[in-house]
Length: 411
Image (cartoon, rainbow, N blue to C red):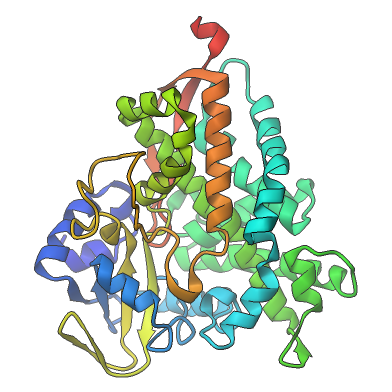
């Protein structure tokens, strides 16, 4: 496979050495024209500085023109635009419209609210650990990494527990539709199906919450007045879907990827056990190392240049986050997993106006989950094959079978 074929192949990101490819591209072709199956092509962007600039200039590099999902074949391009609600979903709205919608959704994710919620998060995480089998034989992804952020975001959104499993299965199809394990039909059909079910669920929530006094983000969206009028039902539904998906995808991938890195780097695990206060810095390294987002797309709104390369208005750009987060120009020893790394200028939560709203919450969840893991278990052993998600959109593990060794057992 040549470079372009690899970048267009979701399977490459589940088993290929994409970090090695990205190292080569940062050095030899940091702004690389990439042919794509839809015939349009796009610019692949690999350097940290270039990604950061693009993310900070939404007026020049739009999320709203065609959305942010990698859409390199015609079927997926149509699905990505319609399913995600491009122009209605806060992730795909450019400033100045972006700000007021984000403001309505933001109160539970602001510092004071997050500080107040820590006790509740700890309680939710504790209950999930309490339900683990006594044998300690679990899939760390499906039994912990998925359930923790699901419980927390659904608590914030006031969504009933009996709906969580269905929502999770819909989310797997919407975000990971290119993975055969989640597919129902083609990749595009799977993504469309998952998003449609989530969207319909969001519409039901909107209908039920109009006129309600609750303060959760979905209720606030359902009753908000922006620029003198309410949001359309489709806008509420699309933003509800975004909250659900962002709430559990990023955290699950960062947490499971961070635990795997600790198991592969026992000296770092020892440092963490020696002083759990290192968890605040460790959470940042979890995100940098695990790369919960592989790529996001932007569209140039006018002619410009990136790294002396001319970019024409209307051309697409694909931002490769794993490359930016291993950029040797920014990170000392980028291939060293270092829980004491500081500063840690990763782009795992993005940058600019679209910086991940739930990023601070994700770090709290990772820290509390790791505190529980270290407190309850003396050791962790990998017991089966580790599998990555087959996707060029989101990055992470889908299976990590382990045996948790309880403290009394180890003694």
